[in-house]
Image (tube, rainbow, N blue to C red):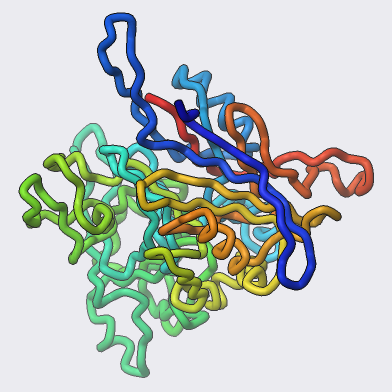
Length: 432
């Protein structure tokens, strides 16, 4: 019988004669049947969780230890999650330390949206029936935000931000353009500033309020490359939101995304978070069970429908906001370095590929190299995750990649052993 997770080491030589090596792990999603003592078939189900840390960064191995302690489950496979604002970037951008560790894209954990999409980049999506998918995600179709329930209220008043008020570039007649509308801006916004002019501007990191700015007449506010920026008139601004570190409830509108019912027809209700199940639908009539259970945005998208689909411009990597926080990810189109990517084959099985870099035996990979290698392994869809020293792949407790990083490298760059770089989120796969 096949192992739940199989892995092998990969190596080769590129067309230019330079070497690469790494490892690939395959999760046999449908290989979960076994017999108990009474010869009845039992089906432990593959499950995936996005685990996050709010207060500090942690190594993937630490996330695994904490997951076992809290859930009494053994992690079969784990890898580093999406992009974050690390301390170096926060210092470089001149932002307050409170922004350290802020996620730079979609994170949904246990049905709760912790961070909305900020570009048009791909996400690894886990639906509540266990179906996996990889697709690009965006906030451009509109969002709805409310503050959490209080003892006196079930849930705060929901405020709708319509698609027509998304990333609104204002003309000289900005007062007429805006009117009384509440606007929202993600990191695809092409301008450096938005109009203040007496409006109230709210800066978010994930689903948390980080700054509330009551602007003056003719004041402009700079877009910072962290999270969503919200813009209200004074009359429309909810006073209960004038609180730093307040968590909000965010839903991403999915106007065109509907959930297929058991007979294959389309439900009228849009799927939560604006993410529809994979094309072709989900068999079995799961009703509301088709909601997104977990998701994490990273990127870039490498493969779709069995073909290379790399498009850095469409996904937003070439915007100034992306370059300021993820410049190396754009460079990696042509520059080789340590990489990690996931893929789905035609049977829905998941593979995780890591290519070592910055070592003599392996120069690393470009995004295009990663797509080519994934295609050789039969992937129909694939996406990259945070590369470089953050790249970490763990199978049954064993780290399969060689990290080029050590937290004390400044003390001695020659003799320190490799160690996984600390991150703020990770993907954990286990049998339920």
